[in-house]
Amino acid sequence: MRAAILSGDKLVIKDVPKPAPRYEEALIKLTVAGVCHSDVHIVKRDWWKMPSTAEIPIGHEGIGIVEELGPGAERFVQKGDRVILGLGGFAGAYWCGACEYCLNGRPRLCRLQRPLSGTYAEYISVWAKALVKLPDQVNDNEVPLACGGLTTYSAIKKLFKYGVTPGKTVAIVGAAGGLGHYATQIAKLFGYVVVGVDIGRERLEFVKSMGADYALDASEAAQFVRDKLGGAHASIVLSPRVAGFELGLALLRRSGVFIGVGMPAASEGGITLMPLDILNRDLLIMSSGAGTVDEMTELVQIAAAGKIKSHIAKVAPLEQAPEILEELEQGKYTGRAILKI
Ligand SMILES: [Zn+2]
Ligand SMILES: [Zn+2]
Image (cartoon, rainbow, N blue to C red; front, side):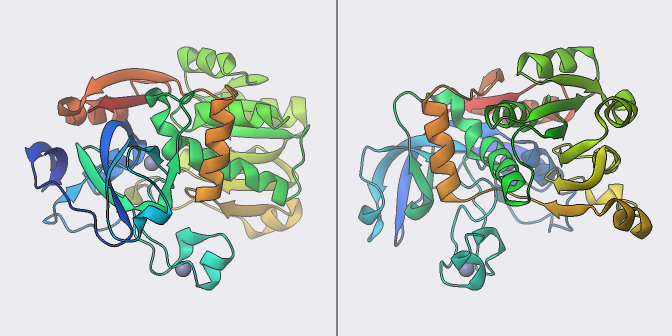
């Protein structure tokens, strides 16, 4: 089968053996894969010191049809089911289900969790428990819900948990990107006042079109939010830049909630935190990554009801994956790119 594989420092399209489903796995014939900004970092190997020799199958967003079942998988899906490969880049391949984190609904922290990787391919064999069935109303263009949508949905749901109730002001940093365009729609759906922050006129127009109450350029956001809105009750940083994290902190009012989601390259270094400032403003600082199968199921229902839509800027064949990643890195798209397989 054809697949996009990271080999050395290059993403190449090549023929690899078709996988066979093992215990509790389902073989999926993929019809579409989403291109996530994480894939750019994985291909550049700039998050951690990743060994440059290992060959890595790329892609963690997919929609396809269940073609074959391994032993035990029939408890979760059936042949012919159309499914979305949920859970994004974390815990989508396996989690134990029995440790303190799994039992508390946080499988991403499970010591045994394995990331899902390899949707830029004709087939993938995955743990059937991580699959979510798709209603017909949700078409293949909604594939970025699998990571971009899910990650955003899970982050916004944390607002409730930490006391940021509907009607309050939520700033979204990186609002025109793959995650950001979901964030604006979901936060509006939940009843927040949304301040979308991004860079450049065209991207801000897009943020406005997604329903943001305010669309602000990063250069003016801190002053506007502080002076005109008294600071945000929460900020969600989707930008994969350290500057985005620092802006997210600057936008908060006293008792603000900060949720970091974007994953800047390690070479960008850390953020500066002033202990006195955290104390004075009594900030709550946390992160959020991927989501759970439950959350994926909820999100699919929201999409089926037509309340959230993926904005697809580019559709390309699998063979163009390397070029698409380059264009994504250069920030050429608002919303998402997808690969038809
Ligand atoms: Zn992703
Ligand atoms: Zn576990």
